[in-house]
Amino acid sequence: LIHFYKRMIIQSGILLLLLNVLRCYGQLPEVPDPTWYEQNGGLHVEVPDQQGLSEVQLHFSVNKPVSGVTNGDYNVQIKSATDGLWVYDDPEIAVKVGDTINYWILIFVGGGGYQKTDQSSPVISKEPPTTTTPKTTTKKTTTTPRPTTSTTTTVTTTEPPYPTPVLEQTDAGFRIYIEDFEGLEHVAYHFSVNEPVNGIDYGQINEELEMPNNQGEWEYQWNERELVDGDTVYYWYMLVVNHHGVQVTDLHWTVGETTPATTTTTTAAGTTIPDKISITESNVGKYIAPGQLIFEDEFEFFDEYTWQNEITLAGGGNWEFQYYSHNRSNSYTRDGNLYLKPTLTEDKLGQEFLTSQILDVFSGQPGSECTTNSFYGCFRVGNPTNILNPITSARIRSSISFSFVYGKVEVRAKMPVGDWLWPAIWLLPIKSKYGQWPASGEIDIMESRGNLQMSKDGEEIGVNQFGSTLQFGGGYPLNGYEKAHCLYNLPGGAGFHEDFHTFGLDWTPTYLAFSIDGEEYCKVEPPEGGFWELGEWQDTDMLNPWDFGRDKRIAPFDEQFFLVLNVAVGGTGGYFPDEASNANGKPWSNESPQAMTDFYNQKGSWLPSWNLEENNGEGAAMVVDYVRVWASDIVKENP
Image (tube, rainbow, N blue to C red):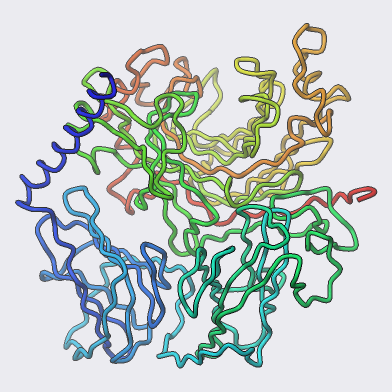
């Protein structure tokens, strides 16, 4: 009976949403068709306006396929219409009449998003205008735009006179790469595991690369599972060399039968062994050279294969006020920077929704599943006393693509400014080997508050301060973080929102050290008894969960962790203490049973500090220039 009423409530909520849309527009909005023009050798796009249309996004490639909602070579946002048209101009995208634009389009009408995928349209001629219309759009590119001519493609099943891909087995799957050479502009791999790929059919994975890695390899790593003898990778690949396309189809590689040509020494698993091996290990291999760059993202585009958006209402253990979503208005890239930006949930769903509707983020679609069900994280019902999460924000993690143990991390970022914003750069354990939080550890490289004028006991604790912390203990609520916590304030009252700073971590088997702009400011070095002794629990009757760890002294920080970046808002866990002084006061008490509602009802006291009307609200965003991880310089003994 409970499930029956729950289903009825969900269906009623969906019906109300549909009725609201129909009441406003008479019918569900139709997604318009763009018209693609060649104008003076460049690209000119027009999308017809319609009632309630507030934004248009185009994701497209020229003479190349774009499947579903994958990124194209060009991904643009058009923020306003002119004379009944949403217009995008880019003279740098060289097209000619007859080229094919493959694209998908997303529009926003009345707070809802509507899309059409797998579309294609020819480029037609347009007479140049007599006057110049100023650009009103913001360009987001996944690659550095280059002139795109009509590509002549040679389809062949024989090897062209270029280097061919090398496939190597790894502990977590395999990697495929081609050595870089002069004129190589683009590489695409299409493959399936144990499922044939015929001709140029799409495979299970379809990966396009726009540049080689630091080792001069156009590389893709597949880390779904360990391959065994007899597993077969069916694949084809495409190269673009000096604007000329070459496809090589109907290839396969079988583990245990085919040994890719290589001049390096490999293990039985197929991973390259350098002369010296770092103590660092990662999910992409155990044999890594000291000081080798093992992870880098400069955010030329938002790579969903690297970063997973968390989708949850949970608010962590702090009962924070945000709803983490994968909406691109909250996490996106532009001009080589990542933006994690909070917005008002009412801007997407309406103010009445917060107090009367259901927010159900369960989903069966890949990439849209709720990621945390604890703390009512996947399903909540709003009412006037306990409203739904009033803020929508973003939290991304590398848990699927990358994890490591020991090494050096650098994140260059600029912090948000605005009352009760809580940005963080941190790491969590990939397996939680020692038990539930905090028994398996947490590494907080950077946490900060966005408040401009906030102090406690005479100390500024707002946007001019950040902290680094190790969380560890036998299990909640046992936590020794106060023994491994450091704070840093910028001199002269400067704020971390004013410029980019580099936040660093040096992680070794004997200590973890934190740095700011290359200068170490905090070092946690546990005694011989490890973090159990640092927490002063060695003389108690409690059981030490790290007694049987791989490295008892540094455990729980002796296992692989993954990266997390996020902007949280508020919460009742104590990070925003009630006793602190803030310029506009604090709109909620950490003891209040309806803290989220109290916070929202007094938004007039804090929302102006976010400056959402200025610069697209990006002053309230954490802006990340790059994330880099290097292997430790320490050499492994007797590897």
